[in-house]
Image (tube, rainbow, N blue to C red; front, side, top):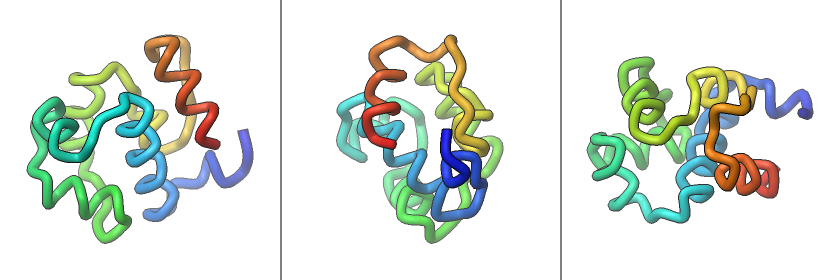
Length: 92
């Protein structure tokens, strides 16, 4: 893990959100339906215009199995589906 991966800056968190969605091979509209977040809000999170709130991050975690540690700190753990872990590691 690089220092950048552990960074919790707005841009870095936004990048992890985008990498996560892409790891699931979903476009923004389908992803937003899955996680229950408005498309415009998600676009703001993913582009770094706004930081995802803890409540919205929990929705992502509940719908996908990713963790708060991954979203905010870049820490992966073994609870992620194996294929998602592989895809996230490819995108580093």
